Image 1 (cartoon, rainbow, N blue to C red):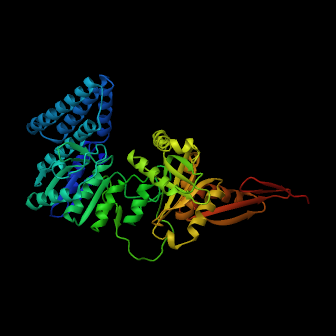
Image 2 (image 1 turned 120 degrees about the vertical axis):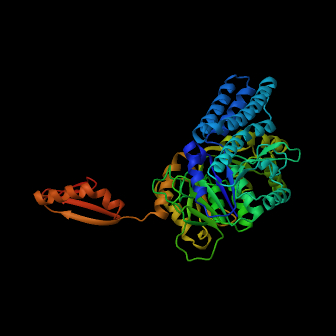
Length: 521
């Protein structure tokens, strides 16, 4: 059995949904679990309308109307007239439930995490129900199944923790009895023991697919998105970035931790435990091979680095301890309070000789972190056992990731010399405990420059230089220069040749960079 997940960009329009149906129709005969995200941007609209309702802003009604119209239009584009009324009435019934929830928020002027989870669930429920019915119209033996009946979580609304023992039992029981070849499920959502809707965090549809794949020991987990796999760097920033054909589970986790958004980080763990390969595929270019994430095998060292990733909008805060007797207890209290407030720690540096700890977090969390840390250590700061919190803004982190990094000592040297050579100052450096990444904190304004510099250093072949010198330029030489100038991009990009030209007459020498040397003869 295989599990396939289709993201929001893959189900954004009626044409996208038809493309998914065609993909599934061409699959070999077998059983498939299909996990679906909400239509593109619907989850953001649901969050927006709930927040507007809590502010007693009637515009939330307009947003609900837009959500309703969008789904109605997709139904009209996908189904014949005689079949539309049933689907539209099902959507309308759920839209009424959404309106009632938002009206309640409007009345009490408060939005709880529990209510927000219930509101966000509508996006996945709508899309998965429509796709299930469309697959059935394609003649495929398909059933819709609500994920909330299978995936059981705790009650930490907003990012619930999965009860794997109970969930696995429900999932196995269902799929053992279910005879349909195609089961379509909404991603991102679950329920607690009180049957209240919970969510698994933004990007949680990937996680839903991995939970199902792990429970049924699937032969393959396919993540269908709008890019052709995990890339060597963010292609929106690095034009020369290219897809990674194969990558280990650990490398994929490291890249996703440091900002690669192709796959939701928690997705990899359940698949890795069962050694289930994960294939990242492009819905719009299905013939592209994509990226295969699987168990790391012993292989010849082909490259120093597998990929480069980074996180912008980083802030560093530093706690300096003036007494060393309680330091271990201070560390414990620091990370406990950050965990309690769900503040994600990206980067840690400990200095035992000078007794301080520096931690990197997202800038959006810094105010909350400052408040809770000052509160937790208020007594120690007052007694001067700990210095007041020092905060640095406008930073980012760049990470090189690869299974071979720990075995090759030149990697860090090449990384840092490349950054320094391009006048990018390094604020802090670290190597993860897995020894599969080397990361550097730099100023945010150098983020794009650093990514491109490092990608060029580790992935791009440097052009071979050809020095061409012409002593006197006449008609023939002039035509040659024009030809070279016209083809210079082709030489550089296709043949990796950089032609350096020098010209001279009796009095002056001109080089390719317009530098002039006077000759006195």
